Image (cartoon, rainbow, N blue to C red; front, side):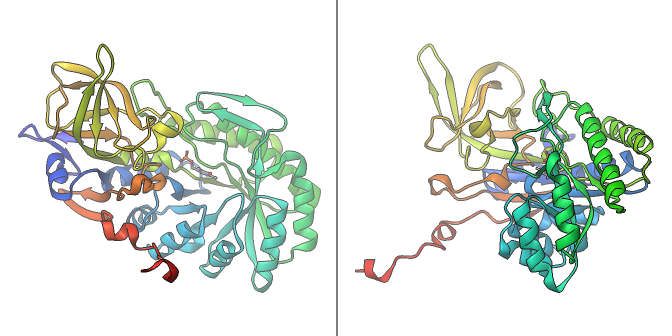
Length: 427
Ligand SMILES: *Cc1c(COP(=O)(O)O)cnc(C)c1O
C-alpha cells in the first residue's frame, strides 16, 4: 500500500477509494504482488537447503484464483477437506504436490483425494489407517504419519510436556504400533515420513527447533528399528505475522535460519541422510496480502462511555475478534490522521460480541467514511459465514493498477438458492 503523487492511497496500483466505489463494501482486497513477494522470500530464505518443499496451507484462504497464484510460485498445498482439494484441482494446480491432512477425513473425501491424484495423505489416527488401506486397494498411496511432538505453543510462550492432549495425530508412544500396523497389514500404503504442526501465530522460533529435534529423532529411530528409509519431515506452518504494533514476529529469514540450523544439528546428532523438509505456511503467506474495506454507518456515544462506530460488516466476514479476541489495525482511507478520537468499531451483526476493534484512534469517523482493516488475508474469507443472512462480500485481486473480481459478491438470490420448501408446506 502506498500514497500516490496526488496524495491518494493505492494498493496494487489501484486507488483504494476507487475500489470501494467500484465494487462496493465490505470488500476483501488481495494484493497479488505481496503474495508473490512472500512466496519468493520463503524460497530464497530456505534456498540453502536443497530438499525443501513449500506447501501453502489452504485453510488460510482457499479459492481458485489464490490457489493458481500460489501454485505458479512453485508451491504445493496442504489441504484439509474435499472442498479445498476440489478448489485446488479446479485451479489447475499439480495435484501430486497436495498433502491431505485432517483428524477426521471422510470416506468420500479420501476417495476424492485418491481420484484426483493427491500426492500425500497425512494419516492422523488408527481408524484412518484402516479406512485408507481399504480405499487404497487398487492403488498405492504415499503417506506421512501425523504425530503430536509434545510441544504446545500458546502464541508467545509455550509449554513442553511428555504427552499432550491433542485431537491431532499419534502420541509419541503410539508411533511404533502405527508403523507396525502399516508395515504388516497395509501393503498399499507407503510410509514416507513424519508430519507435525505445533500451532499458529508463533513468534518464538525455538519451538521449531524443539519440533525438528523430535521429528528427526523419531525418524532415525523408526528407520533403524524397522530398517526403513523414511526421508521426509513436515514441520507444519504457524509462522506469525504483525497484526498490530504490539506484535513482533521474526522475519521469514530469521525463522529459516533457525529451522535450518536446527535441522543440520539434528541430522548430525542422529546420523541420518538429509531428509526432505516440508513447510506449510498459511497465515504468513496470505495475511498481509489482504485488507478489508468497510463503509462507516451509524455511531453511538454512550453517555460518559464508549463511542461506537458501526461498519457494514463484522463477525460474519471476520470472525476472529469475536471468536478469540484477535486484534487488528485499521485507518480511515479518506481522512488524514489528525484530531484523533478514541472509538470502538462495532460490526453490524446481532451479537454484542461483534466488535471488530476496541479503542482505536481514528480521525473523527463519520457516516460514509471508508475504513481499511489491515492484515485480513488469512482466516477471514475462509472463516466467513452468512450469519444474519447477510451476503458474503466480494473479493478483488489487484496488481499493476488492475483490479479483477475473484469472488463475486453474494446476492439475495444466492442466499435462498439452497432453500427448499417441502410440497406439503406449499399453499
Ligand atoms: C493450520 C495449519 C497450517 C497453517 O498454519 P498457519 O498458522 O496458517 O501458518 C499448517 N499445517 C497444518 C497441519 C495446519 O493445521
